Length: 154
Ligand code: FES
Ligand code: FES
Image (cartoon, rainbow, N blue to C red; front, side, top):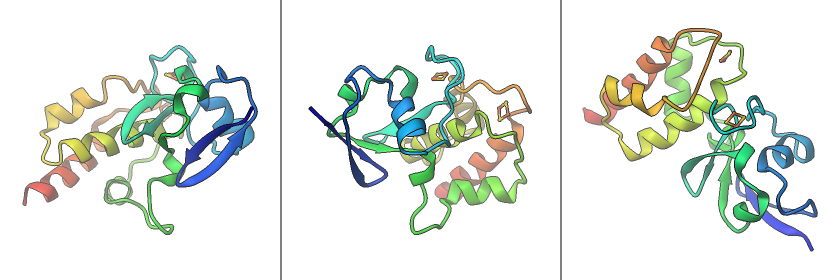
């Protein structure tokens, strides 16, 4: 029996085992490679997606639990090819990284700023506690998120 998955607004039928991790369907079946399978144990955050607007590690989410829910990947955050305000702020801050865990951070911050639009620097730092990155510092990412938060406060 096929499971029905709604990903970035489109419905896909998957005949994979219901316990298949969502990350495998995203990357192997749908070529949505923004989310990365790094630790596969739920602690690095590189595989982060939004499920019903909340961040979720797709390496530990069986597709059976994602059925019927709104799944959004980094590829589906902007609309009509337009980057989100956070993505625009990241570009403006010249945030350049290798791309391994950066998409997961953007997904986490997208959900966080939606819930806490006027967040402080410390709150933004805490929001990223589940996203581990080794290729650079976090400072400019936090700067960009803070620009969005300051904009929301004004
Ligand atoms: S790959 Fe999912 S948390 Fe690390
Ligand atoms: S984005 Fe390069 S290791 Fe995190």
